[in-house]
Image 1 (spheres, helix red, strand yellow):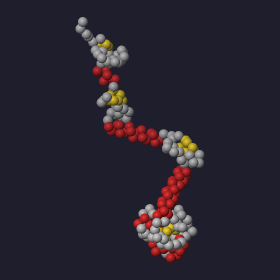
Image 2 (tube, rainbow, N blue to C red; image 1 turned 60 degrees about the horizontal axis):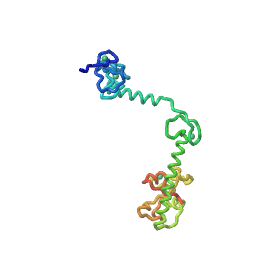
Image 3 (tube, rainbow, N blue to C red; image 1 turned 45 degrees about the vertical axis):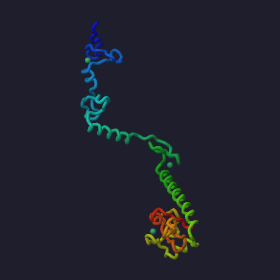
Length: 208
Ligand SMILES: [Zn+2]
Ligand SMILES: [Zn+2]
Ligand SMILES: [Zn+2]
Ligand SMILES: [Zn+2]
């Protein structure tokens, strides 16, 4: 017995070959009806377009409309109200989507502590280096007096009342760095602002 198309299109009723399709009965559609069903309004410009192309459903009709849709999504995400959470350090309420919830003040404090820890580590390493080179005793005040209480890097006066890690605090700078074989002696040290000293190449020596 010759086979004939036996399944009606669920939209227009035209008989179709059911073939090997696994679609449930009643959802089969002829090609023109499928095309019509895949028409959808572009979410940006609203014009009808063929949403099913290249095997996936698109929400916009063109790359220009797609770009606009993405920009819109970004703006909406930015304007969306952020969840209120407690600052991890002071428990004040902050609106944030961030990984850690921190108020502005605690964020600054945490960064400062991180920086300080960084310099402390550097300084410990520095002390170990100092133990290996020739040294003669000196004090910060002696060196400061000798250098006229002026930073030998920027030549500006140094306020001896400031204490590290204040940026303009007095520090001892090795002219030839200890790591480069410079001695820890009065002849090889000079007075420098903390900020000038650390700018010189990230080398810091605490006044001892
Ligand atoms: Zn049809
Ligand atoms: Zn469009
Ligand atoms: Zn806080
Ligand atoms: Zn200076």
